Length: 246
Length: 370
Image (cartoon, rainbow over the protein chains, first blue to last red):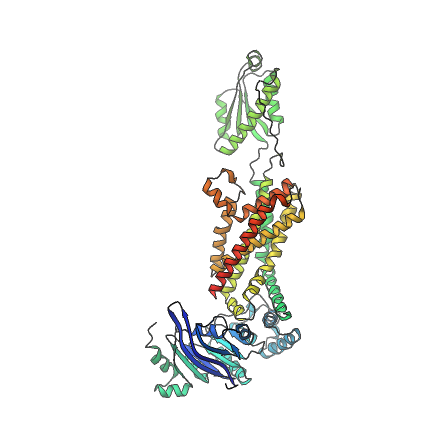
């Protein structure tokens, strides 16, 4: 296997009783890649992410995430990935510094390194004045950026972003994507789900899920050419229209 | 290993921050026990002390005066009125000037000495039935006592009943309310607070982040409940101290045993709280579940206020599965009767069993959720 592949999924199936949430998914994600994971609500995205994050055990298929087996080494997977969800996921009543220390501590970052990285992070985000203030005082855009930085505090191989820009204004979204690019440039693989099709264009490659299956997987420009569409929006609608579950 | 220890301590520290930064909750946690205990101790009481009585003495001889004196000097009654005619009986009761009226027949002393029989009538205000029956019982007891003393003859009845109220000779209701309040408060603080705080993490989305982290589910749960063990324990101490110094509750048994039983009950309440949180998605649901599943049964079915022996049999069975029942019973045995382990081992075993049952059920639920 190519050493630059960090996520390798082969014939992944996940069933809940008779319901097939993930039907024979096969894909690979390379190191430093920004991989867009698209699909309408109920298409099975969340289930797939939970499996990739080590939260769920697959029914069948081969899964390797960050070099670890998706059945037997789920704890190792957890330690080597970062995760940020659509819900804002820091503790509002803790200060910026306390949030950083808590999550870095949970991921086993040493005390000395926590100090160093926290200082750097606070400096980069320009949050010096907020260091000892509760996160609740921060404007939403900053909270989101802070949440992203905190999810990256242990320098994970892969970061999973589950609709990270939901409910955020366009300017903040743009800045957020700048941070995603920086992370990818530094070698972190970014696995992102989104409902914004303009964001899909920012990804290196995207997969589109319909009814538990991956129906398209390529670069945005190749997909637009294949489906004869002007934008990703058009591609998505053409594919998702045939869904049986919606 | 060291790494996982570090992360769990950080997690526990964070939980303390949550608690201590939420001033309202903190006030609730420590203000509530004091308020409840004082309320139950002073307000909710079924003891008779200084009940107002009126006397309609139609005889006014030396013997009837002695009887009235005996009633008043018992400490249970104070004389509020001397009535001069029968129509006033109704008046004073209706006006609430007296809760009980003692009417003594004319020629009381003469009849009593000549025939050995004289009559006294008791009229009580039964709009409060419990009080009325207790008042008449107390008054009758004093009156028959008086009759026996003054009959001059050897005791007419062959069997004389002498009752002694053991362990609580003054029949202080505080002895019941302090252990009950302790059970109530510990349930409230530990079970309700943990279930709410776990539900809060779910609601805020932070639970998801924790589950994706290398923390194991049991570490998350332990981190969430650990601070509440401490808080619950501090509360239990506060209640014991208040009970001891304010209500003169005896502490006859072993303090160590008492604290151990209390700790066990706290852990039991916590495991209930965890179970509740596994089935509730939001803080509101957790709160209502705690209210209905914990508070009401604690008050109604644990023997806290209503004696279990007086309940219909099915409810008595139901009370067997109420955790506070066993805790209250153990508390009373240790504090008031001063007994040791040999007399509370059953309670301890039952509570242990319940804890294990609730915990394994929660673990099962927790896994299904994942």
